[in-house]
Amino acid sequence: MTQEQRRIILIKMLIAEDRQYSDIEIPQDMDEQKVLLRSLMNVRPTDTAPEGFLQIQDEYLRQAISEKGITDCLDIPAVSDKGWLKNVSLWKGDITLLKCDAIANACNSGMLGCFQPMHLCIDNAIHTFAGIQLRIEMGRIMRAQGHEEPTGQAKITPGYNLPAKHILHTVGPIVNGIPSEYDHAMLRSCYMSCLSLAALHNLESVAFCCISTGVFGFPKKPAAETAVKAVMDYMNENRETSIKQVIFNVFNEQDEHIYREILHEKTAL
Image: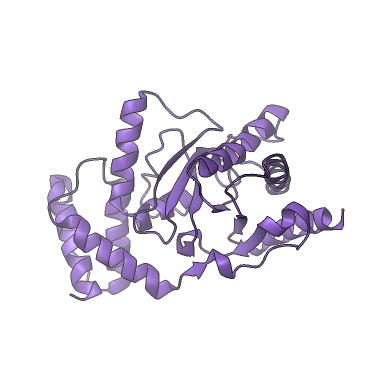
């Protein structure tokens, strides 16, 4: 079965799930089909998957990810060969293409993903390429919990169709203006909670996105300073941890420059 055939089948199955989509016509253009499929996946509730859907979806997503190109965390060099920095890497790229033990997902307190079709947040991307199993699993977890996720804590799930084996879901602080000491403490808690949870599961490599710096409004440089300090403290205070590599993942040149500058200062100490 070709990718186009899989894509058409998946779109038809998702349309058939909800009568409000019954008048949607499947476009002929490949890129428009991809947008439609992703949009339908983005708004799908936590219901059980239709029979036969997951096998086709998994084949589709894994081939799509493979075609984009997977980066193995073992191929990303350490920042330094000294101290805790020998366990730290900086990588600019798409976190959904990173092969490691766990990637961090910056979530909202509902923990079910972003329900805005094609939204550019990392939560949307991770849910899209992990597959609908992720929202189904998070729905189960959140129903059992019975309340929204507090800021600064973390949950772990499989990575499903992602190259990463696991996903660490954490809710960062929402900031309006200059972050307070409490905001910094909650952001620090996100990193500490993720690292502690990863170690609890004997994971060796963890990749962090820039938590809270998108629509949650945490200024980029203070957020990066808090992130680096949290990782530094964790690695120095937990010498027997299973974690061997922490990757700071950035998606643009501005964030890359900020992290390089901060990590360079730490290297010089």
